[in-house]
Length: 493
Picture 1 (cartoon, rainbow, N blue to C red):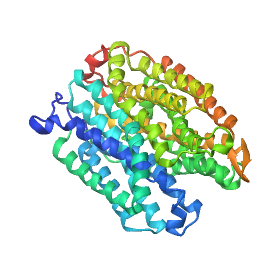
Picture 2 (picture 1 turned 120 degrees about the vertical axis):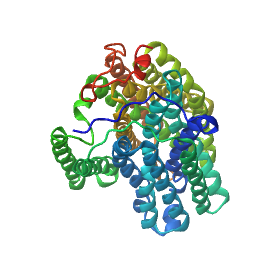
Picture 3 (picture 1 turned 90 degrees about the horizontal axis):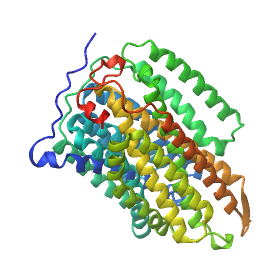
């Protein structure tokens, strides 16, 4: 049996390139989030621009969700095996190629294919976090990982108003030319500033496990994302869920019997890892309702009695303070994790998310209160999302960090998809006619906030059940939860 590559002492590339390693990786994470959100302002006009139906246009979002969910754990595993910088560069390149395809075409089939390619960028954050673990000393790792985790929210907050401004004043293809140029800069910067990690886990790639996971996730997430349109009790949705259960059960059985599995389920079954994944799913659900509901609420017509009638540009600016807050609070997350452990940071973050929703329930009519509540939710998300990868880093072998963080990001994605479906179901069942058009009621929005707040509290309680960070010291073999010597300082922090 091949042994994992020896773990070298972490060192940042010397000179100018080394100083740019963290900023370049953070830029890649922000760029990934921007790519995921830039299509949102286009959705109302895309049917007209592409001469297609609204149902077909919705696949420009669904395709990215599905491909990102499938490729994140797959590319994470590939990074552990073949080199994290190599796979990270490939993911950014696929994202850029997808953007160029969008810039060159108005055909809906091409756009959907291009958006599926862009889903590969979902692996950027877990791969970058794994690189940071390999390259940084413990005293710098916590703040860098916290910043990397926050890039998802920062990029989303920047991407929406940026895309809205471009769409409002220029041809919509211009937006994709702009993101293509940024993508090319990102690919070049990663190749120049980031050195290839020496930490590898050699072996044969699990093709059967990859195909099984892909089939199971597509069935699951397709059912979740399309249930509102196709009908939750319809034959197609029920068939997709039944197929997901059957395929994933077979995949689980196969993974337990494979020498080099795509996902180490024995590692996942340990409380420190498994409960971290559960907390990631719940946190993803809780935070995502904030963006979904806020955007709809502030754009609702004033005739509803609660809506503000804001434009998409103004809506994006309402969410911008949350992105700035995520950037400012990421160092605080690292300090709390160093002093009290990441599970405490995660619990505090989820509780802050719940407090943010309490503010939303108290007042969702005044713009300043809406912005305040959304910003508090973003602050809690920063603390929670920054703590999750640190929990994973402390609980898994160094040679499995990319794949383990990929699974953690996958759980967040499933939580977000479930949140989207739940919010849609709540709002559909709480509407009233305004000008002859059914519009969600304020009660529906408040109910969505209540559900998200309750889930956030459950996430906080789950975090506190994760076994503490202190425990056995020293090096342990990969098959039994190795922690390399570099992580002893983190584990005892």
